[in-house]
Length: 356
Ligand code: SF4
Image 1: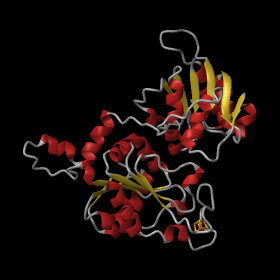
Image 2: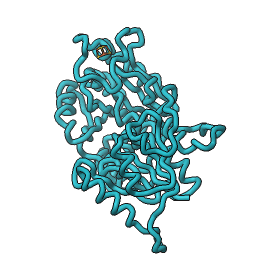
Image 3: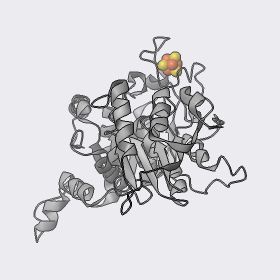
Image 4: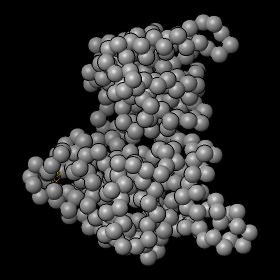
């Protein structure tokens, strides 16, 4: 049996697809069709045979690009064989019509996806989308459509595998590489024990999901922990503003680490504080204690933390929560209390509890 998993969505979705991939890999080789942004997350993953990149917003844009990407996938050959790749089943972890067409063009015996997906008319097996389950479990359930009694694995946590390159990048960032190479340790590293590091992830694509008190939190935490900020290059300006406002020493990793490098840094931390965004899922994969700040969204949507130690900061008593699946561009009520009323002291206390 050989399988194709199609996941061309966001970073967090790719991370949450790894339990599905691991489940399928028990039965046969798994190839993953994904984007150039999320594909590197699968590096070193022992459950993945091949990552096939589909640049849906770049080189493979439009119908011609889609056809070209599918054709080049069809032309892949199994190692040591001259037979074209033929999949026994394609799993549509991303539900767009475009993903369904891509899978159809590649070719498989079965096309398995969710009943709520736009591309469901092209599936041969439609699986219920269980609103009451975590998204990692929903995706995992695609693999068991013909095994209704299949037991959910006790640990549905996703998994990522940072390698030597990521370890070196994080050593460099934290000054560990140079302190190791100095016999008397005269170069002081930023972090002397992984227990002393707390990573902050203040970014989110959706503005209303960005908790506004990360600077205050950094100031509180800096007396006890080394504080680092992660994020993309695009988030460097926001990180600088937090550093300036906090006026304490902060290790700014924004734009300096790959996604897997960020996972490696998170994996070394005593805790991560994050919005409802991709780093939350990186922490789940690395099983790093997580404080997740939820404003207009709620964990019940299926995207809460899965680390074995975690805490959610959210105003459960606010009647307008949740107000949007992803977080609206602006608070429709204008006051944005779901975030404004969550104090830095409260979040810092949650960090202390988790670390203790
Ligand atoms: S309506 Fe409520 S939940 Fe939505 S953004 Fe405003 S305060 Fe937050």
